[in-house]
Length: 304
Image (cartoon, rainbow, N blue to C red; front, side, top):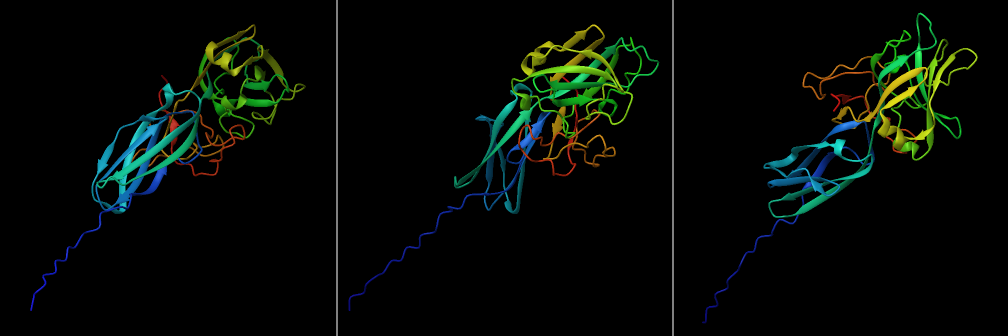
């Protein structure tokens, strides 16, 4: 009897499953207003070694590699300095690959914007012993209020005429979020300085019969105000900067002026520094909604 030798070849299956992205922040359509340093975080899971990379507008922030990323996954972190990026829309892309070159990617569009902050101020009128100075920004075509700052936002020290005060007062919008210069587009806007003697205060338009108008500036587009820095009118001088003094670690706005002071965790997630705060989250001007997120992770950092 002829014997037939049967050879069975067992062929193993190659890994074809890509890694799994468990978390990735900032979230889609995140409002990064005022954030000069954004900490990008991702958690990725796979049975094999993972290589992860993040790009912002196509520019890599650097690859990172981790092993043993099953179940709970591995955490990856990158830092994005937005101060060299223009205000507007940007695209953050996370790409993760395993040892078998199986890849997955996720795209998060975000919006970067500046804060409008008064850093120095002097008024010469009215010559009251005690002043309560507020600065308002109006749409010149409609007279609609688009931003303001008062004692709650950092102008409290300005209480005597003729004295130049260093201050740190970022303008808020009528909804008490940080004002969005980007949301104003090319509209002409003017600053008004008021001595406010009655309640309510910013962001309520002052009553002209109960308060004193100290100064009015010419109307200019935001793009022109950005290049000026100094505003000088006969009865008031202001130094105004458009910048991003915040450090963002999570999708969370800072406390509003009505909130109690925020105490950071023992493992700090903030840069050093401080200042009057109001929320950096979602105004109608940008149409992106992160306003409902918890108060977790922004604080001022040193200005450049």
